[in-house]
Image 1 (cartoon, rainbow, N blue to C red):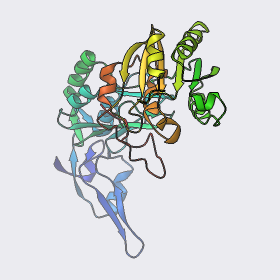
Image 2 (cartoon, helix red, strand yellow):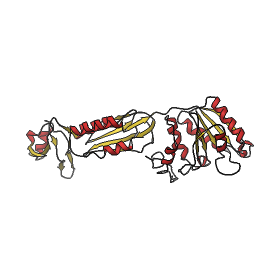
Image 3 (tube, rainbow, N blue to C red):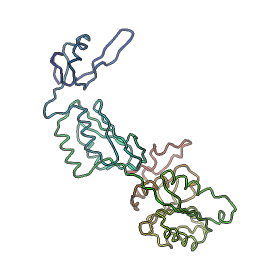
Image 4 (cartoon, rainbow, N blue to C red):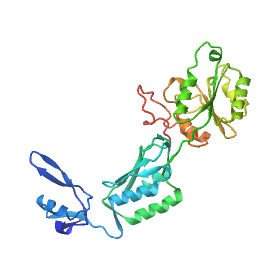
Length: 341
């Protein structure tokens, strides 16, 4: 940074905030640090009593903070996101579609280890809507060497994009409600309406709904029938605890399900089960999914709809952030719940 007469500052980067004061009426920065001085600025600067100012000089090897912030954002984004206009050295990144936000956390940490530039994001695996703010880049100094961006570009070519949004793919859903109390009409079913409402929010069609007693063979047969009817997602409710009548997990396995996890480090929803019939996901939901507004179901469903094949290590990772506060007014997904890296 150096001092120059204002008449020689055109095209240079202002190195300080310049405040205009009108007694009793106005006091604020008329020109902010980082501004590229224009010819029409000179008379106003002279009226402010500024005859010399601090500036940074741009050369062929240097980028202004806004250009650098835009370049940084452009290098780290992938499918489903878009960059906004850079201001004050910051460029925001927005979701271009509804979907599941994916953050390459290891790559993000690598970028944030590079001096003079930072990237802040919302949590990996967040459900986002079109136009949601998902990340921001920021250049720390007013100018940065182009070689920094070139180095970042080489890094991204190895690691792939840091920020993407996977689209949701609605799945034909079969719901199987288990439990003697519902099957025999002793209580009304309160579970299926909750599940149906949640899957329909993602555009899924419920192609069948079956009510069965706590009979392992009948439940197993119903799972196979749903598979034969081209269900793309099977959801079973009830019978997931450890009472003698709770046979749903055994029925899922008897139908040929390959177990991914029975029991998850997430509360509410610890007694959740996930299995696959070939590539067909089958979920067994505990009663907490009916009672609480946000549970393990809300964490796993979006990942399945984004085309991910959830594995046991994905379930294990949910323990970090897997304890819900069960707030009186739920703000999910704008909270910590289920946002493991």
